[in-house]
Amino acid sequence: MYRNLVVALGGADDSSRVLAHATGLAKAAGARVRVLHVRAVDCVEPSTLGMAPSAPTLVREEQGVARELVDRAVAELVGAGVDAYGDVVEAMRAEVAVTVSAAAASGNADLIVVGAHQGGLLAALMGSTGERVARLSPIPVLLVP
Picture 1 (cartoon, helix red, strand yellow):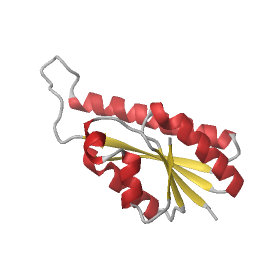
Picture 2 (tube, rainbow, N blue to C red):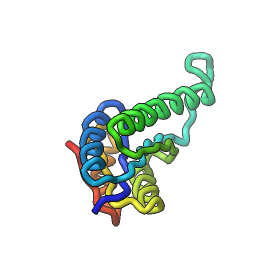
Picture 3 (cartoon, helix red, strand yellow):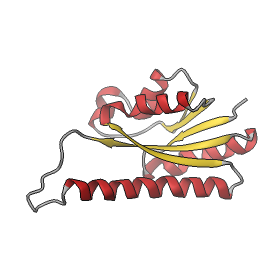
């Protein structure tokens, strides 16, 4: 039934639970997994007055952290016998759920696996990223608590 899964990882806090569910499901179904992390970016750059690193330095550091998160998840899936690959993409903070849904649709995913809980002001106002993905996506969504 499920041949192509998108596993959307929001960060280290929920990635282990989400990945555990996705691994079991992918193994049972013989599905291929695309691990996806959407780096939320803001249109306002941090101060470069010497009190904070320059914007390009911060972006490189954040990209490295995001890439490590995805690479670790892919390695764990592959180690469990799952065909997996991963991507890091960028989107405006308010567009993360739209980006996850669009990536899943363009990759012919059968299911999106995402964490149900993510905090912050945007989540308080609009619901978690996982909840927004579930509302927006025409593809079934598994929300992992």
